[in-house]
Length: 538
Image 1 (cartoon, rainbow, N blue to C red):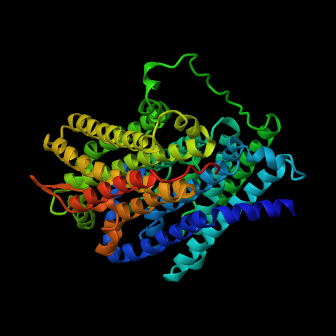
Image 2: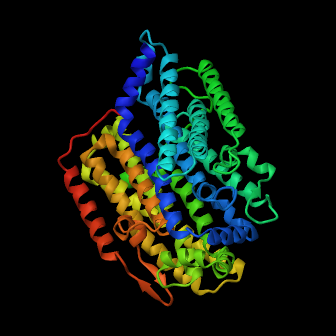
Image 3: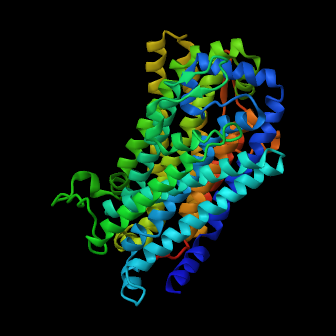
């Protein structure tokens, strides 16, 4: 009963977040069918696209495992990795939030002192994460059933996505035992997630295509990744269930490992020792701006590295995808819908720079989220006890967040320049990268000020709201053109209305709306912060 009571507490705390994650994943599955039906309704188009993918396997780095040109199999190829990645983010964040974060805030110690003991919170978290993935799996399957796809494939794809999520529930639980802070645990979880996602893509790209160029036999590398296991279920085609059992087994092993690690450490401690700071503060810490930079620069560097990779791919792959567009009009149509009237190389660059904008937005949200963590942990009070106005304190996080956006986008532009030189592409792509990068600075800045506004108005919702806004806008920005969402929906994402290059000119699109939103959000958050009391506690 105590476990169920703790689970109920987690449900009351998380129900809004879980609703967004689960319903959002199911909505993406439903939208995928509608979009594919509109964009690739002709089987001939699907056959041609799959044949082109086999000829250019680098595209498999960002898609699933081809298993035929049927409606369901083609949709699973395009969308399954993204359904699984949403389940994985949901699960790993949930695991860290209810374990390491609880220890950071001291709540775990209070619960452990009751008859519930220190084991029941872990059990409640495992039950909570399992139930969340079960709901996600069922809703995803129902979304596929609602559009008339076969039931066996629909249930398999939904359950496979949830099973991958369970693996990362275990990853999050283990990371929470290893690292001293929730930020460190989340960083480890995300690093494992991104590495295994890319590993599955590389394994697919290195696989063996079938004679008719409609399916791919993945290489052994794919079997080192939970995403690869889920993709090898081949929903709506072979409908193989054993890889789901592999996911379940890995999840059980990881959960057991987390429980064993918890048994050998004290509450609040970690297996990886915390790094000791310097005895004396350096000149950087003589100002609150320097303090904010010191607290946030490691995560900014991580997002900047991701930005460099996005920039490299944006230009180094332009010739490959341009060849795809020449061979397949359906691909050309999608890229042109993203880049307006620009050529295919610009379309590829714009697509990757949307990803760059997402990385910059994540860096911005994480910076403002740090303000919330400082406030919740009580360390903000120590700073504000000095002659530091609270408006100045928040402004420092906003300023450093904007610097983070600039650093990530500049890294992407530098990567694009390197990719252009390495691929021998047109030098004009560097100019296009600068234009696209400037547009994504505006888009990312919108999420910076929106998160700051949420921090002022609803402090406890800062972290879930900030990440949810970026995730929703990212899905619309990345999949809106592919699935032909209505213009009103696509234009709701700042990533979709940021200025882009078109030929030798620039489509300014929603630049003035973005600037207005940034100005109002920044001014509003700072003005409201003047009268807001500190909200400590999680």
